[in-house]
Length: 467
Ligand code: 5AD
Ligand code: SF4
Image 1: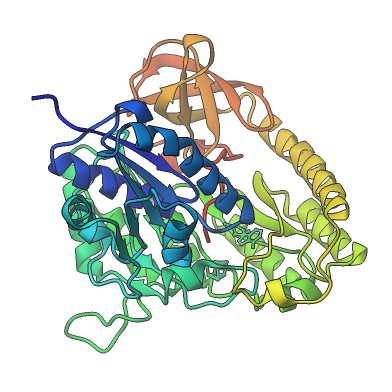
Image 2: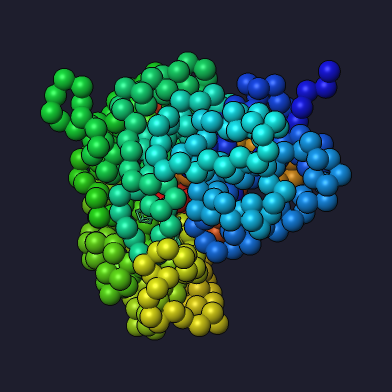
């Protein structure tokens, strides 16, 4: 008998990528195989994002496209998972009654049950408000064999006034350090060479835990050092730290740990102290720049990426100039720039001084132009250097595409399988990627070079990481 097919579409951040690997793992365990064609699928899953308004519009657009298919094939089941499912719950079925299952961020482990029940009992909704089982404990099906997302905490205890995440992901819940290590050991044994540790605010990892047999809490720096000792792993990444909770011991742990890559994502959000206060981000611009200086002093080759929001309510021209000023001084290798999007339920959505769209667009364009120029300058500095590149997939014109330890995308000629390490000489620079040539001696990736060899501007693995 032909195996049933599923189509899975993922929106948003790495946390959703991680959850999607679990959705794919659960469906595979239940006998499904993946397809790219909705017409071919018995189950279609949208793993949704709620961070900005256009995410809503896209979901309802996608659901609209599925309606005729569902009418033609009533046995097809449509699932809405993730942050929009958590946020909108029952209203999704009011707006799109042809949806069969709405499964929130805390209810993923019950996905198969909900699907089976939908067959006999009709539409299902589970938007419970507490995580009982970490999605990390579920089987995973990964798109590439060499990389894995590893969740270290879910939820967030902060209350940045623009951000919907605490509402849809709940308060922070850290995974016991032993569970994280057990997962990482298992991944390394199965050939994973690169992991990305995920948490909304990795610096507060462990605040809600204690170390077994002691009154001490595990810290993120402890976790980094412990993961660094796992044999077989070659690269450790993490996202994201919060400038408010950042601590010197994390810099020390990064500098000491040879597998921890020379890249940090350090969300700025705004360069204006007035706006940072209104955002309830409790660091200030000089403190942010001071952290950058300390990080760069300890890890000289480190690449820095950031998130910036333009057009927060009440942002004046002067506030915006302050952001440009910090961008000039910080010299980010990469910035993810966003136009402020009011999210119902957040404090900022109720604030006076919501800005005119055209004004925001104009500021946004200026910021992007400035950052592109800086990114290109930073990239050009890499030309002539050598770097270890881990191949991720196909590149342009039949070549391969990979990343340096600094998270810079490099295109290399020739066929190279994902998961291969190459020693590469950088020969060309663009704002978002580098061109590389195989260094004399060919494939390999010498370990001795690793802490030094990398260069910088990262390109997102996928859009908009949630932080
Ligand atoms: N509007 C615009 N950008 C936002 N982000 C989070 N919430 C909003 C919002 N309401 C951005 C932040 C965050 C990134 C993942 O998305 O910069 O770090
Ligand atoms: Fe938490 Fe990050 Fe959202 Fe702030 S921006 S509330 S730290 S997830």
